[in-house]
Image (cartoon, rainbow, N blue to C red):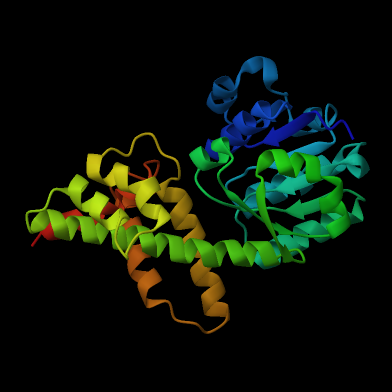
Length: 294
């Protein structure tokens, strides 16, 4: 494997963050995205003309795509990677959050073409990824994972093996459920404090030193107290997509999610106001607006 060259497909927040992280660890990164603006941000000299062209220059490919549909198109579509003459040489690391059943089907199709496929969805924001301060949730064949360990070490030092393909996606959705509710709880607490006359910066500091403390306060608290969301680390539309998967999986297993339902309604209210590309800490504003309307 040409281990010092890593391809990245999907050059949004996570794709660019992984590039930053890998380069800091001595790797060269090459990218591809159907969005020309993202390619320009990545650097035109480091962007391939297509996913297949990228696969001709490296054996290791990281998928940082928005959803399952984009992954299926990238791997199995008319111009998909698995149609490449080099398909059997490819080692694919999927970091996207996907439906567990779908990721299993994708992995099975990949294996039919003799390519290697593992899933590693990430718990952490794009900034945490760039800094190496994130958790990788790993699912797949342990031998394939071991073969990719140098690259995985460079991507994120903290990783946990969850089980067979699909297990890591399930774990990521469970984590995102709790994480989203933590954000909502923090936002509601800060709005409440502001309404009753407390300074939000002071309150955030108190919360961080109290029994209520969580990592969400450190990462998302400053967005909320400054009320600035236009340099996102994780976006509203991404969170809403993930909660759609969470609700679907819960319904399949006959599990009501009353708190997640309320959280999703708040995200949808942000999306309706054109805030889909803002940092998901903007849920603070969704809660604040409910008070303004009373």
